Image 1: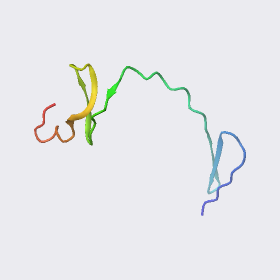
Image 2: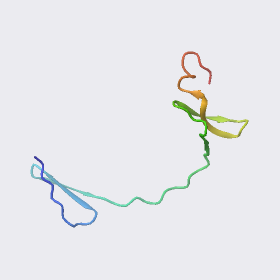
Image 3: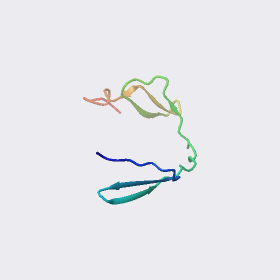
Image 4: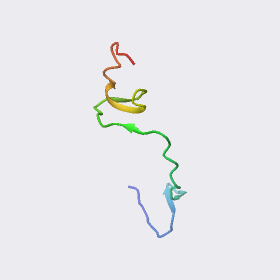
Length: 77
């Protein structure tokens, strides 16, 4: 059985297995980047929807027009 010992050392974890100690240092995540220019209309999404660009609507969509089912067995895309 594996024994786990917890001490109050901030941001470091020591793992000892068969006499070998490995130290892992944990850090906090940095800030998220900018969201980018990608708005997705998914109001009509269905199971298997694929994301595509609709030039007429000038938007990316995920709906029942292009799905994993419509693109198989001779589907057009």
